[in-house]
Length: 393
Ligand SMILES: Cc1cc2nc3c(=O)[nH]c(=O)nc-3n(C[C@H](O)[C@H](O)[C@H](O)COP(=O)(O)O)c2cc1C
Image: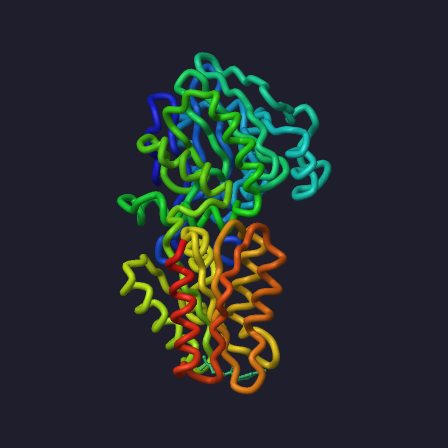
């Protein structure tokens, strides 16, 4: 039971999931867990804001019932239909047969796709659109559509009286409320943003333009803590991230994928040389680091050095996957240096370049460090030239 008070009239009834291994069956969420957030607005009319993953249905329904104290909700607002927020929709719909489901036209299409055309009777569907108002009494929800942030039917709701933005997945972060109560918002919000929403920067920008006109005192996202402090910083970062701008333009991430360790050694040597010049350097071993963390680190820095072994005439798979994931998430607007290794026919630099050339606004440094098995005098000269280029701008 994790009922929390957002304001006198608004309660958090979401559920922590501390046992899920992979969010979206892909992104590790251990040991921090994840929360499926849901809120109840108590007024003359009662609105439940979103449901939760089916894994958490029982606990959520019990939380909702406790807050309702015998009343029935009038509305379930569905900000989007992704199953981690809609998996319990039919359960609550059955529990409270008078309750209407509030969504936009696309929401109802998806409800029919997920649950069948006859799952909800037409008279239970209350369709809203851009700017629609749902009055609950002293609370009024104004709907702002946010298509493709990051599903087509996403909408947010601004509660005008208490100046609360129910932001759907925007401003969410990994980490259950219990386990990450004192953790800073930014690191897991960044990893969540770039991996889950990152591709849709233009659509996030469109949403930010709409919210800029609102006075927002609280943001209630669908994962992670309710945001009441430091909102300006959260909004600033979302503005930056959604334009694919680095947080630290001068910082360098060295990401390496090495089979037997020689390429990794070269990457570490480069790190040492750069640090001697006073540069802030992060290093990431792609063979042991989960992609979602590597992606977040790459977007954080303005400069990236990729170091990869050649593998059967191709890229060593951890580097290949990293580049593909970067591309999917819209990686752009960065300066990139290359280190390749190959014992008989190195091809990694050419292959990395080809992939990077498919991305927008990538500036490749002229010097390529090409190793034949291990770093030697000749390749170290190349490395020093790359260091000079990396430090020149
Ligand atoms: C399965 C396998 C395939 C490889 N394929 C190539 C290749 O196609 N071309 C090449 O030049 N080197 C190839 N290599 C050699 C690697 O690139 C070699 O490990 C590298 O030169 C040394 O760097 P490392 O210690 O970082 O792995 C291959 C090595 C392995 C184990």
